[in-house]
Length: 533
Image (cartoon, rainbow, N blue to C red; front, side, top):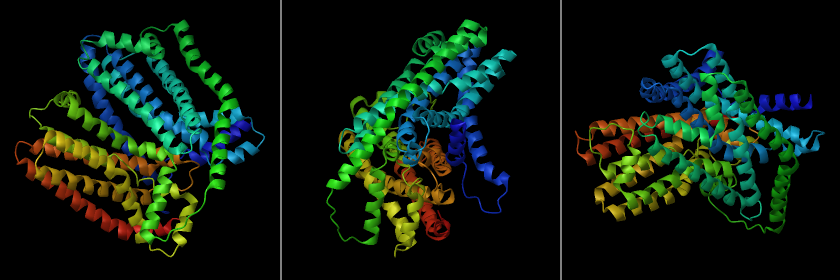
């Protein structure tokens, strides 16, 4: 009963990612319309790729390989997502002290938190798996057993990846707790693991380039790497009770062992972390400096940013990626471009500077810092609002601090590219202008979205950064801007002078930024005032 009560409390308070402000008189349909619409848009896009993969496989009778690829891909995504989600949900919840003081077994607390982690992962998994299942059904018209096995497999898929990612998150937390700057170390370790998994997955793309010709070998490889993939494809072809029992045991036994063993050890990490904070605060000598209001608020935002590993990790990956890709471009050049465009059938020869322009655009827009900054304040927002500082200055400080985080990565990457490829001054001015205006656009847009959909009652940073409506909406809108920009640049590339084309693109970004700034400083300020926690 204690487990059920705790589970109910956690899910009621923390799992409502669609809890956003839609107005007092908004209907239920209006409140759920945006999440459903975004889900369907993503599912449709993924379904299109599933169809493109499944069609050549169907012609040679190997459609099931498409399902193997999607299950393996979803498992990798779950591990990547779980590495830093687990650090927030398992170790950094605000209710740790309360739960530890209650007569509840530690294994029960761990179970509830792991269950929450898995349950939320189902939402992401379904966006990938449902379209794949629909495409398979379209091509193969399977029997009723396919639906039953696929339903069970959908439930089982996140379990092993979540256990693996939680162990990795535990190790990261364990190692980082030994260092003085544990938050920075935690972020660095997470980023190293993340980049390693990312590049391993990225290189897999070369192996599956000729999907139809290599289908059997791909499926054999995935089966050897990850047994549940092979078990699933075997079961949908012909049900085998032995294989089915193995599939259940391989997923359930590691989960149970992790709960039992983790309940004994992982709470020590939390205690060590708290002790190091206390020691640091006792030995710390406070030095007070007088700063202007905007500078003081900007420093406050930076301290909040660097105090949250999940916040840093979620935003810094795109910046690390552009730096790594820049170095790779300088070393391997055209081979990297061919790899990036290997799945695109382009009839035009895109130059290296234009490709790099798009990579920088992608990096700046997908570094979403401010889409969580309002929600992360939580109850402290009332303190900030009570200060003798104008709301405009508060919002301006939130626009400024992303520059301090992003510009060093972007400028260093661009300087490396400029030196190696010896581009002219016009291109240098254009890409610098695009970088600064895009960072500004992303910062202002993130604030507008976060003020529209605030989540002020989260129990940890992970819920705000990864599980809030504002974060999800910001990702989709920025991705839409990238897609529209890429389509426009590729479509007009051979019709307009390249500098005129890029200048027009920069001008449009600046124009949209000015419009959003006006909205932020007028309509969004009213929404900021209305937030009460």
